[in-house]
Amino acid sequence: MDKENYATHHQSTIQALKVSSFKHLSISDAEQDDNNTAKTSMELMPPPKLPLASKPIDSNQMQQQYCNENCKEVKTAKNEEDQKVSTSDANTESQSQKKWTLVDFDIGRPLGKGKFGNVYLAREKRSKFIIAMKVLYRLVIDRAQILHQVRREIEIQMHLRHPNILRMYGYFYDDKRIYLILEYAQKGELYKELHSQPNKRFDEQRTATYIAQLADALKYCHSKKVIHRDIKPENLLLGAGGELKIADFGWSVHAPSSRRDTLCGTLDYLPPEMVSGKTHNHTVDFWSVGVLCYECLVGQPPFYAKTNDETCKNISKLRYTFPSFVSEDAKDLISKLIVVDPEKRLDMDGVLAHQWIVKNRKIEKA
Image (cartoon, rainbow, N blue to C red; front, side, top):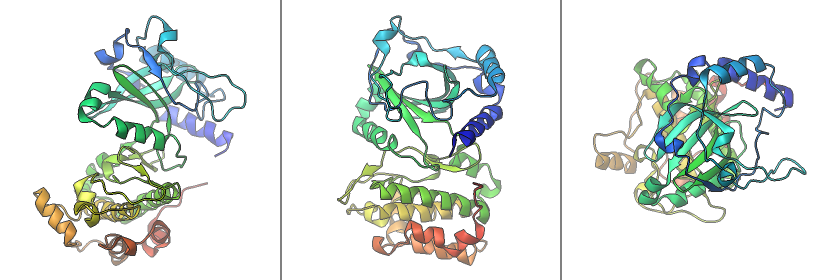
């Protein structure tokens, strides 16, 4: 995307944000602990040169109004130097290192809450660039023994560049929290969008468009030897234009030359080889694409049952049926993805070329 399109996209995103986005600011006590000092980071991009914001925005007056009327600044350490984190710039030639800290951001309303932390709407002060700030609590992470998972998520997502993958701009951390600086997906979770629909399902055109975008993003991930392993509606977000974006790489792995044997992901989306504890590779994502396609069209996963044991049996025995309203072409695609033998599953090139996708997907404007 060229600079003109970047600026246009950013301006349209700002205009689409309502004033209410920065009302009722909710910053927890944890975020207001001004004795907590940020220590280190492996961020590759310094502020304020965030994407889309390296040039002045035409809507400066509107942005200033947001800042004056609807933002609260985060309390930060009395000594800013204590809170700065080491960074480097991979995209500029001769800039000295610049450091991320909470003082660089205005924090807005909560976007979501999870087991390990919260996500807030935020804005980098100098550029006015809007981001999502994911705040993870180290005590909770340590108790759950998932620090390695968080590190892996950061290492992988920081290096992925694709329009259908949520961008991670950087991170920093202190004694109590880890802060992830993420692209803001304005339209939220695919899961919530799906469940807001009549009968909790999408039509075939919309489903085909999402599946095509997902397939293209996974094709890119696999070319980088990255397996996501937890594709599901809750981990897929929607951007300002309604485009799908893969998020949450916590269960993903970089596996250039090995098969994995870790049980992870969400049961309804697990393939037989993972349910039975066998080794697996990138083809687990192929299976998940089929399950997602089914859920988007039908309103629930194909192997859904009241108990986990029954769900596992359904998966292992490939026990599922199609409602009568699902088209034959859609059935054909799903049946070629939900295959017990991993090597016989349709790959992402095959998905993109499938007649149902070609016929139904909405082509994004250049």
